[in-house]
Length: 67
Image (tube, rainbow, N blue to C red):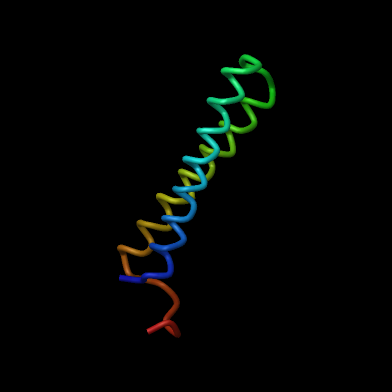
């Protein structure tokens, strides 16, 4: 298990949650505008990146120099 990938995955997951929160606030104040869609797209990218980092960390096939 590679802790560096797991920590990066956690960081991206938290960032995704923050972007979802900002998108909800934007929709509540201004409706579904372009900015809300951009924020949701950024959150989706962060969640996908988080999942990829977590799977990479659990698989344990990181950089051989890390071990």
